[in-house]
Length: 278
Image 1 (cartoon, rainbow, N blue to C red):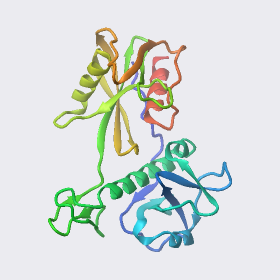
Image 2: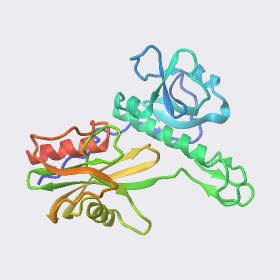
Image 3: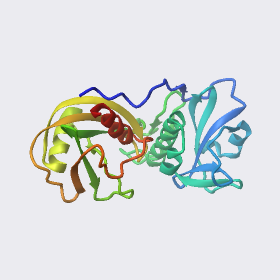
């Protein structure tokens, strides 16, 4: 089978930075969140777009994080207490579905930086309030010196094929009802490849072979790095893991169930693999 294309077709014109670059740009990308929901301009249906840089001064300095520059414009993330006049809050997943790939990738970064800061305000070793560092994205304990960096949780995703059939599964806790590739978090001391074999065996009772790397995606729910593979069926019958998988079946390319949209790597993985099979 031909190797599927990775999901990104153009370079991301994003220059990450911790400290604001100078001079500041007149317009900025504003990734502001209220209770985990992204702020978008009113009225309903308005697209995420650059804003006047003066907006930055309306946010508390302690809640702001500089992310870098996208397409030459400064990017800022912030957590604020209430939705200001002229704005509306939208679930991040829904907002990302309407964004271009560069915008959604920076949105993912913004959400993860803010969640990291929220969960690391106190030292995990001694409980002392931590302090942000000017030179790097880190929070350091002034008492014991423990330093915390933004957390990243690697997770594998694997789309298994059997001839022209695809193995797709629906999770027990799925809120969308989509059928997707198998996925799971990497355990301590485990390689990505070992994780693929273990998760496939645990979730559906199958053995796989010929693993091929497909691509990766930062996923801010809450701080995952999704690493996707394709693999071929090597043996076994489908036995769904009762507490994880509600349904798992082999599907023909012309009889697929609802699958994730292309904004997620799962959507790319399934569609690109279908193209390769055809």
